[in-house]
Length: 121
Image (tube, rainbow, N blue to C red; front, top):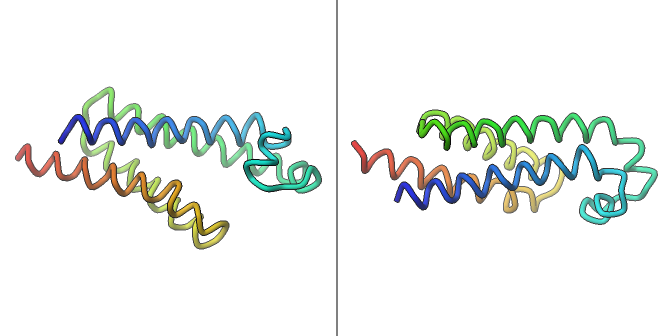
């Protein structure tokens, strides 16, 4: 169970590195505009906000990698819970699909991490 939990945690962390790169470096690029369904004008007006969002996604990824490297369940649980809350909030406030693309993988990883911790006791 721990291996599966770590795989899912790694995937969530890697996904947030990808989101960070998109938001910081490709927001105003045609790739970012296509992925986020934006016009060049909207991308330009929101570029600084997107970079800030990207930085926060990088922090989430760093925390998840820290949890994996240190093998600390508490750190993994904290950062996976943060990603889950961000996914739910994003789904409510920005785009419904965020619940599934960000929140659901975090929920699966969180359940696996907690199940592994419970089995360890």
